[in-house]
Image 1 (tube, helix red, strand yellow):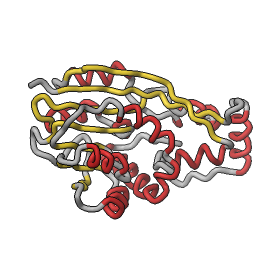
Image 2: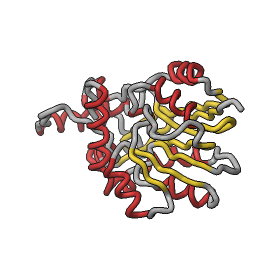
Image 3: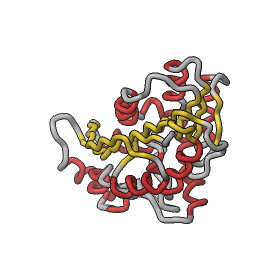
Length: 259
């Protein structure tokens, strides 16, 4: 994974394009994302009337929300049109599918009483704006349940390729908490944890990353056979009995808007 520094509009376009390309194979390769999301799912409140799935991807969690809260109005929002098209084709129009940016949500103030977001906002460059937008669209007393990633995620991939920039450029926990405080939201609870997943070989590791859209390649970059062989050798030094490890540094946040 190589994440380059670029102006925000170009960055957003590249992220949208990468995830749109990944839509057809996302669910087959997103096992780590699903397992992390199950922890978030277990924290849901008992009821909700208007729900936003922020960064809904292929709509798996959006559909589960619609099933869990059958009387609620559920909206799935994503920046990638390809993901939304896949979700709508699979789950239909009983869910509202909306293209948009988490830092500029296309909704009126006080629209949702629950926002659910699994591993999405790490792709947003301006976390302060994201938190302000969440505060704006929540109803008084509304809640946010979200997971995102912290520095150190994909450290093994960075080691194998000898490219520190392969690490996701994410805010740390303190920056997230500061953004929450500045937004006016209340931090009710936070859980940080390391989750490690295992793969049989480097090909499977890279497929799991590329397959979920998590690659924004350098322009005109081409890997040589030698570079690939060296990366494979480096990664093999990290192997343990379960396979090649890939670490995700996760944080789960429970936020509320004051009544």
